[in-house]
Length: 73
Length: 73
Image 1 (cartoon, each protein chain N blue to C red):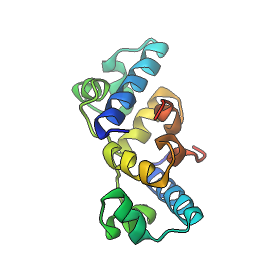
Image 2: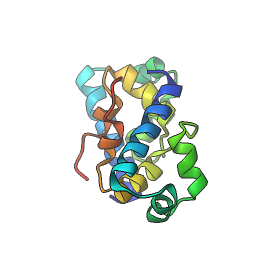
Image 3: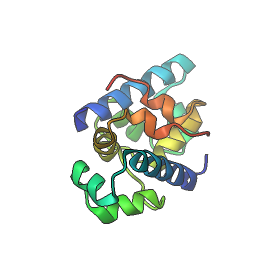
Image 4: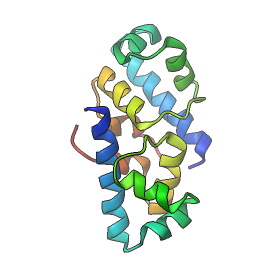
């Protein structure tokens, strides 16, 4: 998996789960305690998100961290 | 999941898979293109590893990124 790819795939997964919850990027950002533009960047695949923020995002989305990696290699 | 916790759980998972392959931290570091002390820190749960390095470690271990998150919340 290209390094670029994991950021895009992760961002797509976050967006898909967020939309399935019917919440905005702003609402997700609030739930995570992160900035809205950071969530926007993550969903666009431009952020090299690290473990602590992966945990925050998973918690806010009500899923396990591993669910955020549920994409093909 | 506490932020501390995800780093420890991730590190434990990396160590378990590495040992099941019968390779040393040094060998894993070489396969990842990362430094041996960085792998050691990851396994001790002190590194906030980000997506690109998660992809490198998964590739070197021959697993999917999601397999590195296969632990309870």
